[in-house]
Amino acid sequence: MAFQIAKNFKKSQKNKGSLLEIKRVPIDIPFHVFNSSYFQNDTPVILVHTASDWKATKKWSFEYLLQELKKSGDLDKVGSVCFEPNDEFLKEDYIFPDLVKQIQEHHQCFTRSASLRIWLNKKNHVTPLHYDSSYKFGFNVQIKGNKRWTIVSPETPPPFLPFTRFSIADSDTLHGVIQYNFTLCAGEMLFIPPLWCHRVVSIDEENINLNFVATKTENNENPAFIRENELMKLAIQLSKSPTIYNLVNGLHQKLFGEELEIGEMIREYSQVEGTKMANNFSHSVSTWTLVRRVLYELAHLYLVPNNMHLIKSYDTHPLRTMIKSLN
Image (cartoon, rainbow, N blue to C red; front, side):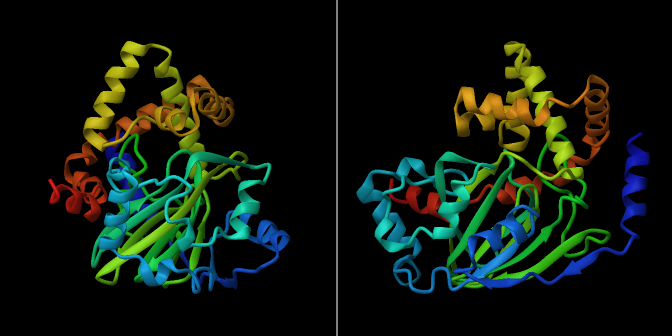
């Protein structure tokens, strides 16, 4: 079965994909236009001049953010790949875009308890091809530097490491997919819809991004969405037996550095809301469909040993290195 899956993937790569040109629109685009043209259709777009006048574009640097974190006592909030400050952190340095506020208040949107994330990457850092879990979408503001993005449509998802959101594909050579390749420049904001895979290369010496993230509660059905629902269903079934769940979840964290889908959903949205959303997304997955998904993912296990470097390259953060140097 594993051989057949690999054979099918190689065959699919012979198909010609679509390289699309991403649109750039002004940040003051009317909400109803953005909602109908981009949010509802899950279409990426760049909003120009979003942060051109923000103090952050002139003030923020690795050293500046480190010192501000020390002042606020939030050094412990630096995660493996980003940090999630509270809403008061350096709020005088940026303007919360009205468009983002309106989307977060939309009836199809559920806002996380920590909706802000700040990313710092050095020159030539590559974030490998992956999608964001928990059905998250994001508004990614380029504060400093420039980044080269490749994003792949959930209509034509690349192959993934089993039971994860990380792809084994090299996006620079991937064929047979719908994708965009572009550079996000300082002052611009990218809207990236749920389950769009993305690979990001940092261009400048220091690259800083501010993200606003949330979960879209009603999603368009596509192959990536179907797979995510099935993996969510698997995690829910495992969670009914704490012993088995803890064993599998521990192994998953050890191998791939993150929790099973249901664990992250609960951590981000609370026990009640996280479980409710997880069940809403996966309720239509039948037992047979779940079994088929498990067999399909297990058939890819042979790919893990030679692709672990992709996950390890994702789990790097220069700010954590700088913090360790203070001790």
